[in-house]
Structures are given as C-alpha cells and as structure tokens.
Image 1 (cartoon, rainbow, N blue to C red):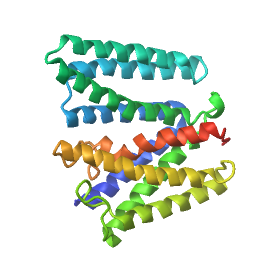
Image 2: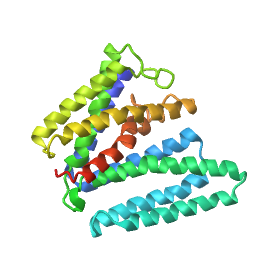
Image 3: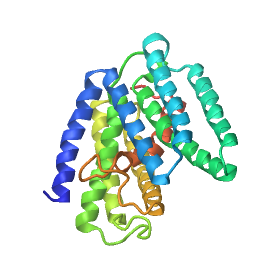
Image 4: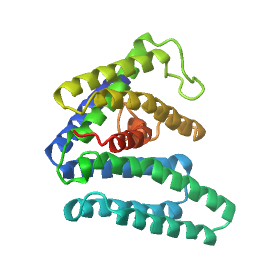
Length: 274
C-alpha cells in the first residue's frame, strides 16, 4: 500500500470514528479533544527534546485543565474562572522547577518552550470543546465543533490534492517543499464552498460559516507552515507515526492550533447563534 492509499484509508477510518464520537454525545467530543491534545503535546515534547521533569509538571496542568473542564460540564456552567486560576497556579509551580535545575539558563529556555507548546496545543482544544456549547449553556450543538473540523479537513484535502496534481508555484519551499499556491487556493475555494452549504443546512446567522471557512483556510496554512518549521528545526520528516500516511497528530491537526482561537473570538464577540 503506497502513501496515498494509506492516507486515504487512515482518513476514512479515523475521520469516521471522530464524526461518530462527536455526533453521538458531548463526552465523545471531550474524549477526542483530550486524546488529540495529549498525544500532540507528547509529539511536541519529542520534537523539541524537552526535559521530562518540566513537561511532567505541565502534564499535571493538562490533567487539571481537562478535569476542570469535565467537572464544569457536569456540575457548573461551562465557563468558570476557576479553570484558569488552577492553570496559573500549576504553570507558576512548573516555573519554580527551573530554580533547582542546572544550568538554569537552559532550564529556563526549556520551560519557556514547554509552556509555549502548552498554550499552543491545549487551549485551542478547550475552545473547540466550548464551541459546541453556545452562549455558555449546557445545550450541546455538535456542529459547533464538527462543522469547524469539516472545514479544516476540507482545506487540508483540497490543498493536498490540488497541489499534488496542479501545483507549480511553491509558497515556502525551504520550510514546506510541497505547499503550493495552487493547492492553497484550491483548498480555500473548497472550504468556502463547504461553508456555503453548511450555511444552508446548519444555520449560523448571516454568512458566518463562510467567514469561518475563510479564517480556517488561511490560518490553517500558517499553522501547517509553523509546524513544518518545527520539524525542520528538529530534522524530522513527521512529528510522529501514529497516523499512517499522515504522520503524527501534530501533522494532522496543525491547522486547529492557530485557527480555532481566532474563530472562537470571532463567534464570541459577535454573539453568533447556531
């Protein structure tokens, strides 16, 4: 089985499992967010060769984060400032560790990189979970998160196949040698088209599915290039090998990390109803 066949088969199997999990129950969405964020952070740690002690301290923060989100889903309104207070305490505690490690300059740098990765990976998936609970309610709208994932996957698939067969003009060949402007434009147009169809059958007010599709396609490209830059610095082709044909979880969800926070802010600021 060649790489393209592996890519398609993995996409069908994994994508179907994700859709079924998110569609069936909010716990399915929660489990998806936890698994992908944790495995992505492990790959991030390996790419940067981070200290196990420092990342373990932030790992405790990740556990506290998801326990808080879970508890707030079952017991309290989804948004609770206690979540962020717990995070600040654990992040501060993890920073204290560098005072007892030598050399302190290297430990501080590792902590900074580990902390940046923590925000880069975990926060977007918390926001993705919250996007299925509009207006801070407990009423579950699975399309709040699933629709955005559909847009993201469409941008990736469109860019991959259009770039593979029509791509000639490379965007940043020194960072990502296969990314082309033709692929990006193809992915963008397909994403906007999907946004239009979602607009007809899963209404967001005005044309917000289309706008969200545009945000995701553009920032998804930056997310892909950013993750490619990390791999080049680590001299790695893929972030992992758990997804045959795709690489690792960082490779597959790199668009989520940069695209979801702006989409979340956009939806919250405009008080979009869906």
